[in-house]
Image 1 (cartoon, rainbow, N blue to C red):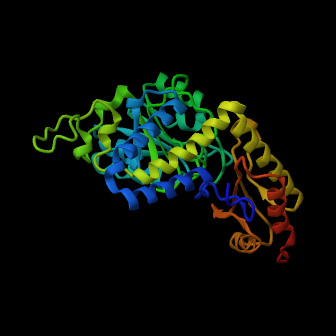
Image 2: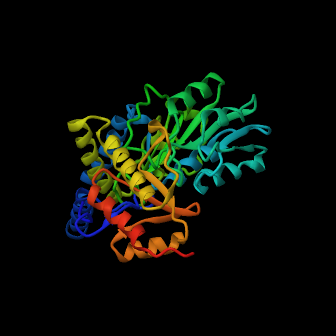
Image 3: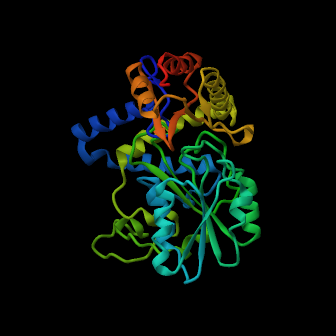
Length: 374
C-alpha cells in the first residue's frame, strides 16, 4: 500500500487508498490509451470479463449473475425501479441505513409501496427486529451487511433463512464487507447484492458489482437499455432488442474499462491473500486490530460503539471523546497524518488488514494529545 509509509489511514469505510496493483493498472491503461488507442480494445474488454469472473468466484455464484456497475446506488436502483411492485407491497429496512439504501425504496412509495423501518436495538440491527416488520405484504428486506457508522455486522445466514422461510427476498448492500468477510452464495442464497470497489477492495471510485440471482432475472424490468444490453450487441446495422440471458443486460453502454482494470488488479491481490492464508485471514486480522483499537481508545478516555459479540464486529470503530468535538479530532488527526471520518455524531475509524499496531498507536496518541474542554 503506497500510502502506508506516511499516513495512518483509517478511512476505508469512506474511500480507501488505491492499492499498488490498482495504481499500476491505471497507469498501464492510460499509457495504452494514449499510445495505441482502441487497437487494444479487445484486451480491455477481456479484463472486464475477467473482473466478472473474479466476482463470481469470490461469491461462489454464476458468471451470468454478475453485473458490473459504477456504484452501489446503481445496483440498488436496478432492483428498486425494476421490480414489478403492486400497490400495498412493503419493503423493510433497518433504522440508520446510508441514504443510498433508503431513497431508492422511498421512491417506490408513489407506486403504493410501504417502506417500514425496523428500529435498532441498543444501536444494533437484529434479525428479530427486521423480521418483526414482516407480514404477508412484505416482498423484500434490504440492508447493509455492515453498518456504515455502527460497524455492526448482521447475522446474514440467519436473516436469509428466516426471510426466505417467509417468502421474502433479501437485498444486501455489501459495500462495507465485500472481499473482507467470506460470502458463499451457495450457502447464503441472497437474492440481490450490490457493492462498490473503492472502499475495502482498495480500487477506484466508479467501479462496482451487482449480483442478481438468476431466478429473478426475468422479473426485473431493464429500464436503462442500450447496445450492451442485447445478445448481438455489435450488430449495429440490424439491431434487435433481444436482451441478454444474464445480468449483463443491465450494462447498457460502454464499460468503465480503466476502472475495471484497476479494480480487477486490486481484487486479485485480495483473492491471492485469501487463497494463501485462508478465507478468514483478512477478516480475522481486521477484527483483531479493531478490537485492539477499541481497547486502547477506551483506555485513553474515549467512549466507543464497538459491538460486544465478536461475530458482529467489523473493522469500523466509532467513538466519542467527552469534551472534544468530532470535527476537531478529525482535524487534529489529519495534521498528524492520521485519516478518520466523522459519522453519526462520532469519529469513525475503519481499520484494514495492512494497518498495524503502530498505526493504532498514532491514532490513540491523537486522542491523548488533545486538551479536553471542561
